[in-house]
Image (tube, rainbow over all chains, first blue to last red; front, side, top):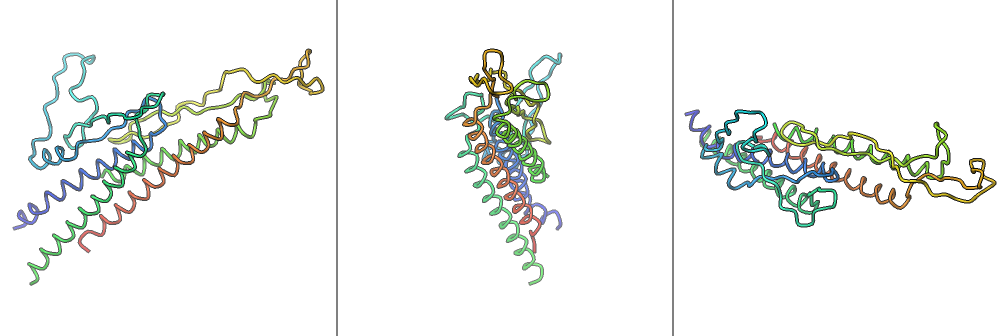
Length: 134
Length: 132
């Protein structure tokens, strides 16, 4: 029984943590808007969520026989999803690729979707409570 | 919890920007200081930002305060106490226009970080209210 309750909330929980992780990435892009050679990063949310729900996220690490070998995913990963670099539209002379308009828009968008997700969880919980209490 | 880490990331951004603003204030205040503790004219100071890992994200750190090495403007003023034997005074190499631009940029970047922090706080509060 408890299993089923957990099961019905799992998708929303995964989506919420992925939104939170993306929010953190976008926050570091905004914080580093003036850092020379900083490259703006983001994740492909749709495929990241698909992978996280399917549970096929974490890829096997590339075997290294020397510490000079390159890592498989140097950019790091968020919940198993690879962190990608944003393609710059107007890169600045100091090598920074943060476009503040894009970052602010994505940040607001992600915040709104996070809030929507919170609402969905609340509604789901309310529904379950109604089912229990009648 | 990744949302809590945003406080650290944006906080580091705010600290770095305010240090930059501090350097701007120092440069503007000393735009006419023809001498300093070492007897040389004041040299413009610039902060150097660097991305630093902070949890799974990247914060900002001020790694150095660099002095501008360019020569100062020479002004002919034989009555000035700091004038050399030819009557020239070396002024600080502070470019006031550059500093004003720097100031506006730092202030906007600071505001952006404050907005990010506020949004994250709202999200966290909403998360806490799940199921109420």
